[in-house]
Length: 242
Image 1 (cartoon, rainbow, N blue to C red):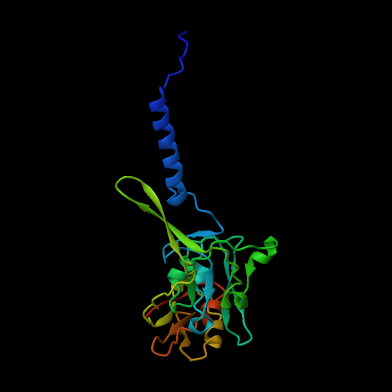
Image 2: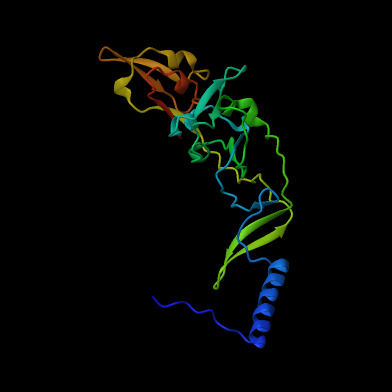
């Protein structure tokens, strides 16, 4: 086995090496090249379409239940309010932050944020009721600047920007699309008439055909309130675009 020899440097070479090391240290002190974010004093800047904590604007909700229907993790449930309407609640112990509920919200009542670090005391507290979704959560911030990764031709650079990055997004409201109720599986209808009784606009009527009771929906009268969708025992009513 060949023994590794220690290289020998003369005085000039040693001076050059030490000077280079001191220059590198001074450069890192003034303009550090590290890509590590010093959280919580720094917060990484994320895109406006970041899928974070969800807020709720009750005035825009049309009670269509679509957010609960589309949720793949069963994290969204509808809660009855004193006005006899139903509004969403979110269980963040189940939520996978896919934001399907936001994408499917016809009225734009569910809104995304860039909040990603929410603390809970226990798992039961992760069930966020409608009242809690309406109000913005209490936010304690220690960051004094935002950072973002910039890919240059030479390397990956961490750019530091003074000031806080806003955690709330200004979302362009979706176009108002009229919704109407529709039976997606008429052959499964029991003819119980509950939807007809629940309809406040008299848009649903029952018809007897071939000894079977069938429900007819007048799309001109339907307001898309979603009450019939909620009450249908067979879950065969859906709100669709008019």
